[in-house]
Every structure is written in C-alpha cells, then in structure tokens.
Length: 543
Image (cartoon, rainbow, N blue to C red; front, side):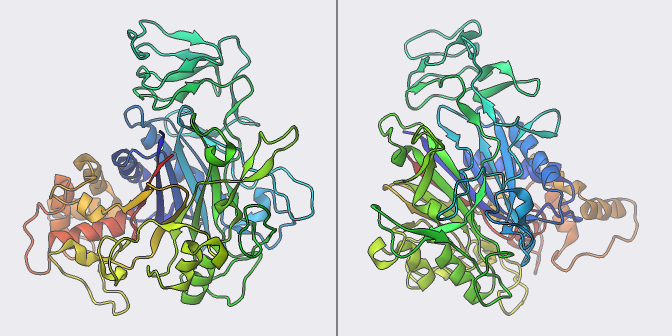
C-alpha cells in the first residue's frame, strides 16, 4: 500500500531575511535534509510572510529539494495568502480576493514530490457558495516547476497533462519489471501500460514524451520501487494542476451526517478581535491527494484532503479557531472531478488530515481538542489526535512539546541546561487524522538532530557548516581571525566563540564550553535563530 509521508511545519517568519536567515541556500539545504530524513512526500508550511518575496524564498527551497538523490528529487510548490481580502468580492475565487491575514501577515505554502504511481494532486475545486453556481478557483499563486538553476516557473495554463501521443511516456534505462532484466535502452510506452508492483524505475525516472517548459518532465522519480500496480494514465489527464491550494470557506452546519450535511460559510478568529470575521482573519488552507489505491478504487478511499491551519496566538481566539477548523468541509469531503459529465461534485471521504500550530496546549479534556476527537453525534469530527499517547500532564512531556525555547515560557528566564529536553516546551503543534488505523506522527527533534550525539534524523554536518557564512557569524569569525573587535553578540547567543567552533565542525557539542555554555543550549540557539522556533510534525499515512 502507498505510505504517504507528510510534514506540517510552522517555519517562523519564513522568507524574512536577517543576519541568521538571509541566505536561503543554506536554509533550503536544511529543509531538504529534513525532507530526505523523513522520506517526505508533502510539506505543508505555515508562516509564509507578506514582507518576504515568497516565490524567491520557495524557489531556493525547491532547488535544494530537487538536488536530493532520486527518488526524493522531483518537487513542485505553490503558495496562497491566508485570508479573505476586505476589498474582495464574493465568491472570493481569485488571488486578488485574498490577503495576507491582518493579524500576522501570513500565508501558506506546499511542496510535493511528484510521483504519479503514488499519488497526483487534484486541481483546486470550484468555489460554490450555498445556492450559487460554481466558479473557477484561482485563489493560489499557481503551481511552480523548476526551470534553470534556482528559478521556478508557473506550470502552463490548465496544468501539465498527459500528451496526446501514441507513446506519451518513456521508461528510463535500467527500469526493471518484476522477473525481468533491466532495460538497456529508454523505451517509449503507451497510456494504459501497466507498471506492476515491484517495478524498479531506472535512475532517470519515467519521463513525458513531450516537453513542458523545454524539459521532458519526470512523472515518476528514478530509483523508486512501485509499491502498487499502476496503469499509466490516458491523454489529457492532469498530472500537475495549475492551481492546487484553496482556503477553507465552508463548514458543516450542525453535526456531520454522511447522508446529508448542510454546508455554509465559516468565519474565523483573529488574535486581536473578539468575534468571528469573514475577511482579514487567517483561515485553513488545503489541497487534495488522489492516491493510487488499486484495492480501494472508490473516490471516498482515493481522495485524501490535507489541511493546514495556523491558529491565532491569543488564548480564546486560538481555541475557537480550532473549533472552527474542526468543521472545515475538506475534513469530511473532497471534490471529485470525475463524478459526472459536468464539473464534478463534492463527495464524502474516508481519510483526511488536518495539522498545524493551534496555539492551544495539548490536553484531551480541553474543549477545542474535543471538537476534533468527539464522535459525529457529539458535534465532533471523529478524528484521532496523532501526538497524544502519553500520560497527563502532556504539556510537560518532551515527546509532545513542539516549541524550542531558550528562555522559560512566561517568566522569560534564560535556560542554561545540559539536558536538551529542557529547551522544549508547549505542546501546541499537532495533527488530526480521520480514517483507518495506522496513521502516526512524531515531532522532529531538531536540537537533537544538530547535536553531536547520534540521533534519528541527524542533519548532515556540511549543511550546518554552511551557516557559518551567514552575515553575523561570518563577521564575528573574521573579526576574531584578524584580531579585531567582534560585533556585539546577540543576547540569544550565550558564547559566540563556542557557537562558531560548532558551526565549523558541523555539529553542536564539539566545543568544550563550561558554566552556562552548554552544548544543548547552543543547539537550541542555532535552531531558533537560523531555522524556526517550532518543530516539524511528521505524519505517516498508510493508505
């Protein structure tokens, strides 16, 4: 069965340049290493900032993702603003009708590793307010493919389609079907060609037999072993959509009833406002996977919505935002483009995932979590909380704590500890799954991953070493080498000399330190300064 690996990550102020994040080459390599270590298929990102150049930042991450070894090297991306614009007009179906939310100036982004034998991404569904006709959805900024060194370009209007050729695909040299010998030549094949489970795709990947953007696009990465029988799709099939991301506009009205549920507009909360708001407030974004599941061909089993939400940080708006998110239509339904002769139709689905930073401390008895975990009859979403398997108090258990801090929460007292666990706090990032058993999630412990002790998901030393060229670190090191007065040390760095030593060695804990200068502190400082204050939520979906 397909194993879909999803990372949901609040990357703090993504795109804003600083002395510690201004070179996106190093940052992109770090993100790519995380993706490789988790064998990620999809990365959902929160906190894409208005003040950044989103396309510039995301292109650099895409370039580093595509520099990974096959089969982890065939990435597309897209981004979307996070709120409805005050000046927009219903049905708010274009990018101009959206805005970076007025509470924190944020949007969302998604990356996915294109592999049509595993899944394709559905095009964004039409916007259809209750009682109105459907309208084409152009809310997102269009999907981007890599073209050139680090530049992305929008996919063509209508997306990337299977070409209308007699042989629209090319199997690469080295492709090995079960029981056969590796191909000694590139072999064009027709639509309808069956790739049996166990087929090893040659290093070059399965190509389209037509160029898109002057490149024959890879549709199944090289060195990938097909897990389920897959029939190459017919001409005109959308392999990469033009628009994939949408904002959540509609929600269930009352308890969910699989037979018939009324859907209505949903408003969301802001940190500085009391009531729910139609415009200006950040709302969830989503896209839909169309998974290759030969044993479960029905749309209810193939279509899997993935939803990401960054709730406001103020206590009541965050809890109410969670409750609102639990009613989101994509948590229960997906748009089936093949449902009829017309535009398709919304259909109930058996699997969905909603993840994000909810700014609500994890506690099963807290009412906003109960809106997800309660049964439909109790006004819940009938979901499972994926990072929620340890005794109370969960917020004090490292496995659940999703934020990296170098000062104590609320008191602002500096943390100087030998124990890396003491730099973890607040269980506020999570994921909720609705569907069959087997879904699981872990928090990617980045401070441990950059430390010198062996740890799951260890970040490659050469990636950490690159950060020594960031403006502050570079200036500090050059001043020391030349006997000059170094620039002032930011208050968050306890010992710049030790930090520089660790950066040059590619792992934290090499420098001896002493007193308040601990390896655990330096690892936490690096993660917060150069990466993010939130840990990635890594979800595995066996489908």
